[in-house]
Amino acid sequence: MTTSVSEKVFRRGPFPVKFRLLEVLRVTRITPHVVRITFGGEDIQGFNSEGADDHVKLLFPEEGKLKPVIPTMGPTGPVLQPGEKKPDSRDYTPRRHDAVAGELDIDFVLHGSGPASSWAAKAKPGDFLGVGGPKGSLFVSNDFDWYLLAGDETAIPAIGRRLEELPAGSRAIVFIEVSDASEEQKFDTKANVTLTWLHRDGAEAGTTDLLNQAIRGLDFPPGDYFAWVSGESISMRPIRDHLLNERGTKKSWVRVTGYWKRGLSDHHHDSQN
Image (cartoon, rainbow, N blue to C red; front, top):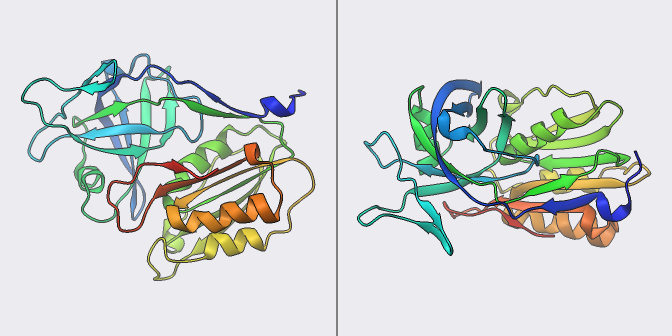
């Protein structure tokens, strides 16, 4: 398949946003600090996620309550009913969406005492969560010569989904930073993947230069490539600068995103390209 340069990467959307009340169907421990929660229920009908790095807004119930407040969408944004309290919310990446089965997987990294980690650590079948979005999807062609994918634990859902969606014959070079070997995961992919796990070995997340050094030390293969990197916001800046200014990567073929920021508990995904 031949795709023009302008069509290799583009964004679909914006899509109409609906907030849904979804029910926990299954809880699966992936690693010591990652839990995969599968959601379903009647309200999942019509949900759609087309991009590997889509993000949805999760709405959490108040402490002691089973269900979260679910706003409606007004012309200027979410609308609450009189007396309703705005729910705690966080942005997450759909790990898997099966429209036929009516299932949505979200992977949670269990750390700290924020609303997402606290809720996920105790979640069980029959619990409920609110989900809004995604607002749009990034389309990335499958006919790049190769793909550079890199990130920390928060990027694994998007990286895993991208690898599993790449067709046979694709090539991907992947760097993933985790705390130690116990946090490594397996991916079911048809692509030719070179995967390197980078261990912090006691260092705090967001304090190392592991991803930056790995990308700088890579002997880039020839051909067109798409680069997707995500992790702690400040640590993404030198990686973005390296790809654009030193490697000369086409700006539209680079996606560097700060999924979180040290010291902030409520940081929304920000794109730095």
